[in-house]
Amino acid sequence: MKRLEKRLISTFLAFVLLISNATIIHAEESQYENYDTATEGGVTLKVEWNDPVLGQETTFHVSATGGSGNYIFRMEAPSYTDPDVLSYESVADPSRGEWLNYTEECSSHDYTFTMMASGTYNFRFYVMDKAANMNYLRTNTFIQVSSPNYPSVNSIVQSAVAQCNAETDRSDYAKALWLHDWLLNKLDYDKSLKWSSAESALTRGSGTCQSYESAYSKLLTAAEIENAETRDTYDGHTWNAFKIDGEWYQVDCTWDDSNDDWYKFDERRLYFGLTDELMSLAHPGHAKIYTAAGYATRSTSLANNYFVKSGEAAKWVTSYKDRIQENLNAGKTQFSITADNAAYPPSIYGIQNGIIAYVMNTTDWYVNGKKVDLVAQTNGAQFDFTVPCTEHKWDEGKVTTEPTCEKEGIKTYTCKNCQTTKTESIKALGHNYSKEWTTDQEATCQQEGSKSHHCTRCDSKKDVTVIPKTSHTYSNDWTIDKAATCTNEGSKSHHCTRCDSKTDVTVIPKTSHNWDPGVITTKATCTKDG
Image 1 (tube, helix red, strand yellow):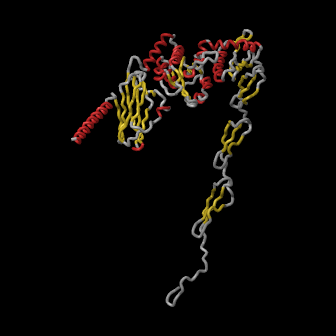
Image 2 (image 1 turned 60 degrees about the vertical axis):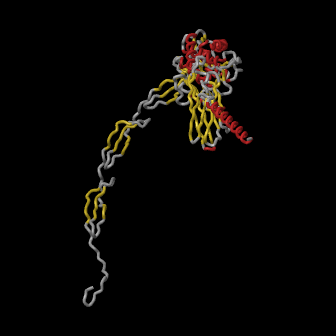
Image 3 (image 1 turned 180 degrees about the vertical axis):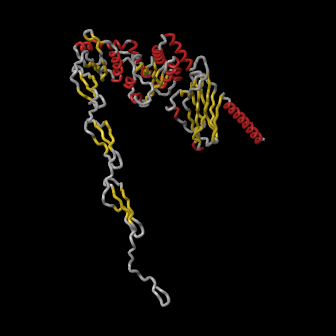
């Protein structure tokens, strides 16, 4: 009876445990609302998740079955695209950090990610089962999300451009500057170097230089301003170029995003509207980029530079005016002035002084009421100035290219005051032909010759005249051309003494045989002759 009771109790407990296990399995299967799978080589990778809520973490439960049971997992950096657009951009830098690392061996792993914009996100998860020789198996999952509280990247861009148009005169310069400042106010540099997209810039407020470049490009494009990416592979950096009034300009939003106040100008706009040369002072690798063949956004103008357009650069020039004018009034045509910002780092004073020199060269300068052309150039931490003469005093000149019979020469004159040079042409000399004939080719018995009058200075010739062939001069002596033999006739002729021609070809008869005494080849017998 006790044994029966024990069996009944054991059976009851087993039944309860079975029900309990079934309940747990059912609970696990219903824990997630969505799933995606991929199968290969006997291994199945499964990803499960609940319906995502924008702005909140979504958990992705990644597991595998089959194979050896010893799995390692990895999540790739998710990518994003706006609604109804097939143009995915990696939200985070796929070449850094967590996106490269596999887990330790396990049966499952949970990943989390927060989606921040309406649109479509692409998630890719990987499993590796080395023991089962499964080195690559991946799911490829697309998740559409939407919420009025989390607009798409394109909606954010369009809203910003609409506000820009309402608050500016809608000139390309004004729009480019407004959008530049708007982006800098919205975004902070991601020192972890994780986020690298327009999505992260405009929804998370964080990103690397790639985020600044990508977001600003979308803003410029929506504002109908032609733009391009400038990628400096030598310095590992990227920024934008935009085109205004037919000219390209360089702008680095990342380096402009600064709260520093170290210098006496607006540091948040130092890199707005630069030439390639000035941008390369901050990013030396760019010098190799813009000088390479095929570079498409060559930037040489400062007309739409921020400090030029705002008039601040003109104020900088004002501090140099008295010193410049003093040198001009003294009649100097070459002089130098130390820059006021010489204590700044070279990359900073180099850019500022390049802008100052541009304004100096577009400013009117006068000496004794007469306008002069002042040329200012930067030279390290100083400005070098050159003033062309108002009245040149030329030297006697020097022949720098000699004239020839057919080509003009050049004579160069140098100003004794400013070393400026000018040139004038020297007329070609013309040919000077000799009156004497020059035999260019001797005539022969078989070919005509030629003669002409040659120029005494060059190889030119004129009056080319034919010299007739000469007559043959035959020798009176016979020349044996072929000796006669006993079996063949020979020949003889009179030969020309100047060529191979011959005449009076005559046959020489065959010669007679000259027999030897003979040799007995067969002996005679009594009955037969030998």
